[in-house]
Length: 194
Image 1 (cartoon, helix red, strand yellow):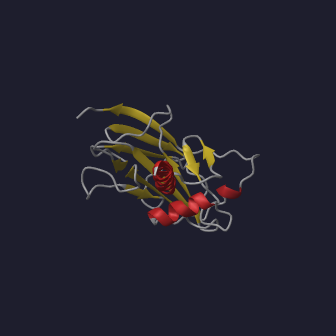
Image 2 (tube, rainbow, N blue to C red):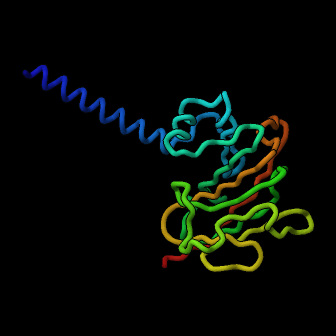
Image 3 (cartoon, rainbow, N blue to C red):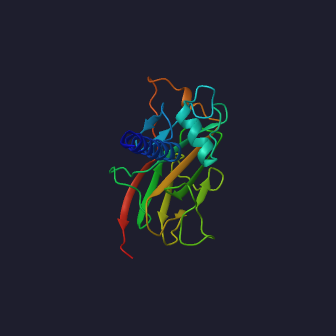
């Protein structure tokens, strides 16, 4: 009876750890083979025949399938340029030049990729067809709780935020190490405690 109890305890621990780790990996871990430019990270092999089992499990678990390499590339930023987590109660300045792409979008979500912001009617996404640019082709987007002049995305509430930039029909995933890709900066311009 004592051996049975020991085996039962060992199997219970193994099952608990196995299920917990599988849940965490399939929900939170986006896979191997990432590329990073500044605060922006992308997974060019996700959605292709070369994708690893972890990215396939993440896609199956969350229902968020990646685009194929010929369709585009999704970049995610979780930190600002000072390497601080993006927060709902902070204001940011997204500025710079977007890498070459036929079309692009930028949206803000919570940590679970769900649309964020205190209201459902506010701007939470912008695209290459709806932004104002300066004479050099650079853009500047205010990310804040209160509406701002020029390009604006609404932020607000509590918790972490993600900035998701999708580049459609881009060659950035095939660029060699000799080329330098410059991504837009994310500057924190102040936080509030309300």
